[in-house]
Length: 375
Image (cartoon, rainbow, N blue to C red; front, top):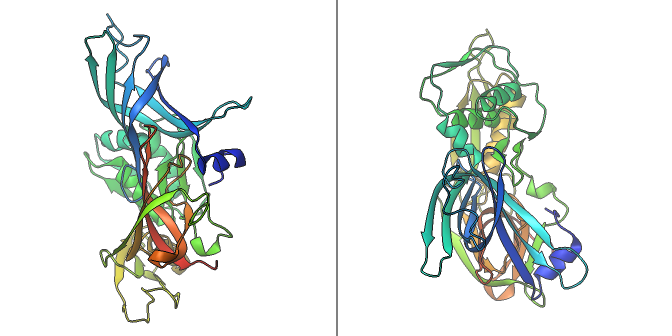
């Protein structure tokens, strides 16, 4: 994480003054900034559309309604950028966190008796726009095309100027891939990214990220801590145990159509002996099977299996916590949670969370455990 200054993270642990707003940007780049008085940015790492914005704003200067023409609050290409930050009581400018770039889906404007207006907005990150831009005719990716290039070609249909934060890959298609008319392009690029052993999503700045999930066991330190004692901003903690989906292994088979190579197979398992879902422990083996037509070698199959497994491990042991708001999170960040009375001391991956846009609302986080804290 570490996306903000040390001063920012220090202020989070104390009483501070927050600020939040939404920039509304029309198709012709007209921008209007509105204070946010309620609402959330909701983030879910496992959802097809990772970020959603639900917000209530006020229009104190009456810039938006009524209008004779060019209404900016219609869902015809208008985008929104949401922010939350801290106002310092010195000469330091406010420090804010971007919370995402969203495409407007619904707006409701209410004029009250005092002549003011309240605006309720629902919006989603750009992946929903790609998903809605269905293939109108059968779409083919030719044999021998680099997989990342194939992803970019599909995205270019909807966002020609999309920016990327992506790894490189030598993986290419072994045979033509055909998508029917009406198929979901975002599902297509998600499947292609999985073949690379990667996640794909839009980040808070509206860039497309194509990268492997973080390996929690390789990280030197957590991104943020909730350790009981002075400065701890966690209030409530709930343990959740579930065996759904509960996979502790992934087996990927590459059919490799279009060439004479035999099918290949790669596996990844929870091999951490202290894990409750250890392959050879009491939990047993619970594999998830995947067939991937892009995988040509055992190395590629194993890499894909590891990436998929990383998205499942830890779901049998989760924490739900309530805390003061840290607006700088991204799904997949690693946090340390320590509370002796609950017997909790470990590192957790952040899967689901919200960022409230109202001053006194609490942040809700869903975490899954991956290894025991050394502290």
